[in-house]
Image 1 (spheres, rainbow, N blue to C red):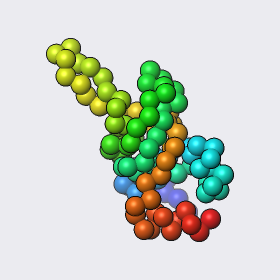
Image 2 (image 1 turned 180 degrees about the horizontal axis):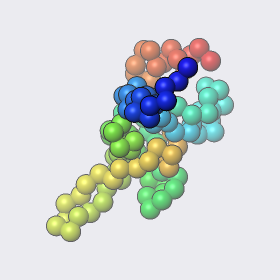
Image 3 (image 1 turned 90 degrees about the vertical axis):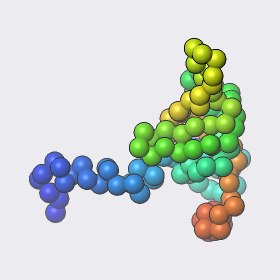
Length: 115
């Protein structure tokens, strides 16, 4: 039975584990056929390719995952400020495609082996 109070209904959306699961991106066709999965949770170290937006075609490693804003930053995708310095651009995970997985973590490696 669910609660009728909206405050309690929204509580699940605030949990860090829920937000982490929502930061997912599709796999490339060769990884999809290799691992039998369509999407995967993004992690720092995964190599992604930007598929939509102003930075379409750029490829690089995930530099950081921001769960509060539901955005990621990719190495090599930077914006130039008016004073000449560059800052990383935050990209939505739906606008990228994973081209190479970081399988240095044993638990993550085993999760792809099982399928």
